[in-house]
Length: 462
Image 1 (cartoon, helix red, strand yellow):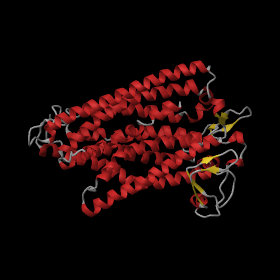
Image 2 (cartoon, helix red, strand yellow):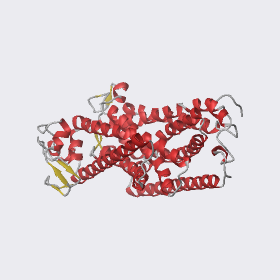
Image 3 (cartoon, one colour):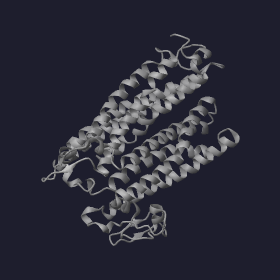
Image 4 (cartoon, rainbow, N blue to C red):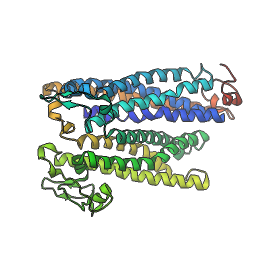
């Protein structure tokens, strides 16, 4: 499950956010009569479709794993929190239909009609995210049920089970995080092209729009990250203690940047900042922070698990802080000179920002899941009670098959992307001098129509 989730989650930012970024570029192309923007939107939509196809494979495996690997959890709690998975499934099928319509419409629909039919795509993606985050938030702060004499959940309240205390902080942190991740990754591709001397408008626009979206959202995400950490402090104090390596409940608690927790409660390595953890948690040094020893050892993460969650959390904070500086650098140059920063180091950092964001996506999942141990449903069911009793040999066989499937799927994904990129580059470089951007490929966004007609939208037919 860890392997499949860690692999699938790399595709999630593109499945949720790439439709919105593509439609934003599409709107710019239609609104300003910008053929280059239309060409970028058309190409991004092709990448979006390939990514969605791979997501079908990885997501289907995950859906089977919930039943095969976690029968204890699904059998006991499925009636309580299963609605989230149902919402995600409906959103998944709706998104598949909308992507098909959007791809089909490039050469068959009038420009503005095509755009408006594509506009529900981001909403479907957000609905899918709603379902998954609702299920995960419930696992962190389970609500909406009572337990009968035998310990089984009864009197299910669907609204309370969906809108749990952690849902709001998790959902907005997730949505903003995946949008800025997709923005930085897409911009990073064009940053590499700019570093290689491709300074044409195609690469500058392909970089500027997604990077601007990501740069605007970066400080917002930093604030949301602080908010969700404070929510964990109040709603899951033991998880907070694990992510901050707090051993004993106390005030004036120091903050450790990285470091390693030991069985006696000591922390080695890292950087110790006196009182900062209490200040961050409650805005004053006298804030009391719950420690790991406030609960029995069987009800808290082990020292290894706490260290893993702590490192994952610190990596997120470190990368987020660096991205805020990068966004400020970009914003200063755009506001002052109305152009991209001239330093090659900016483009190098921008090219790495996408990979750094994908790393934080992984770290966010690790923090959420490892910090909750040993509970799969916080304070209601342990992982050991939920996991399947299948023999180890069968599990290893299944794991081997899954690894092979995922390697083939991601290998195919990267191969298709490389071939598409190569074909597009050849089309661009092979265009005759003075050719319009929309004529660079045989299969153009809206056919060989005059630029004024493209801008006006519905004034022309195929």
